[in-house]
Length: 292
Image (cartoon, rainbow, N blue to C red; front, side):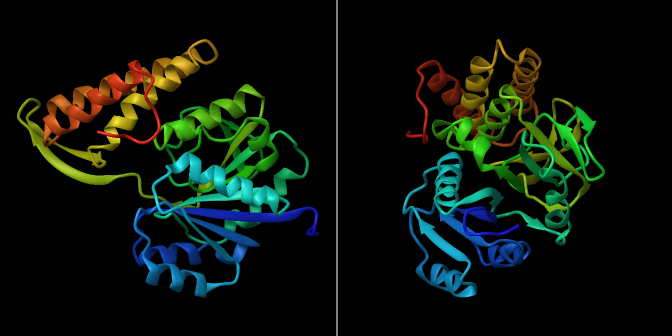
């Protein structure tokens, strides 16, 4: 199945100010790849980390950006590198994600041979991955959306849909890409088993006087809420006439997030400031990296 003109599986991981635990995460999938593109979005390159990383394996190709170009652009850089090296499929990973074992790399090959309309195959990290699921095979269900980490993406589909949306920078990059795949009738599959560990935010327990009980929240850095509000509004506008159900669900998500900020978030004014700046920049059509 492998030959020089039709190589099997490349991979990429996107770094930003990485810590030592990244090495262990990479080890969980490196043996299953022909090559791994490490796209480093750190503004200041850790030379010692980079040198250690390159010494781990000859499969690793380290690609420093010396600035934060965002998740979407970094994924696009890796996809172009893989295509230029004649790969048809690309594993996409966050630095915080890892595989529990090698099962995902055993099962993905089973289904791709008979279906040219598979856009991506995702390794599940939760059993609440998508409300809509349809049985596809013994190993996978078809779903509407998958997060960008833990995917094996079809690079032909990536080319056909013009890849990830660079200007979104970080949030909603996954939704936008999956919506584009679905627009062109590509399938999005997820494993039936939980095969991957993935960090989605920092847990923060707080007590709200407004509701009188403790709530466990998944919080991000406050600046992320700028991208969340701006980019949710962007995809709602872009896909309003092609996927009304999605638009309504994301708009509800945005309203619910705003309500949580007001009622139970710590440092409410800080979070609200970034949230409202995102709304403002959406109205002004200002995208890419946040610039205060």
